[in-house]
Length: 67
Image 1: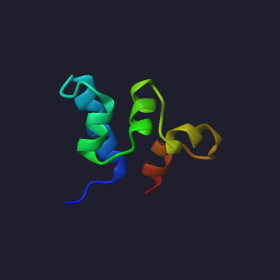
Image 2: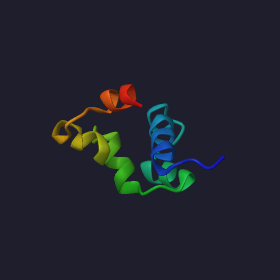
Image 3: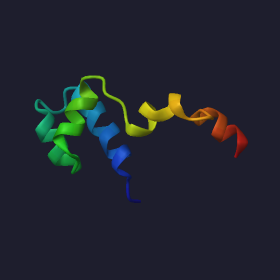
């Protein structure tokens, strides 16, 4: 099963927080994700989808309920 880029970023972030990797660049390389994106997420940044949610008419949860 292929993982999406978001799933790889989340797993890499978990491993950095669990100190499985001492460097963000090492985790980014292991999961084949961009190190600057991983670093930004580590500092508290959010995905584009989550950042734009306040501007949408329906929240992610509301969309899931409609489906």
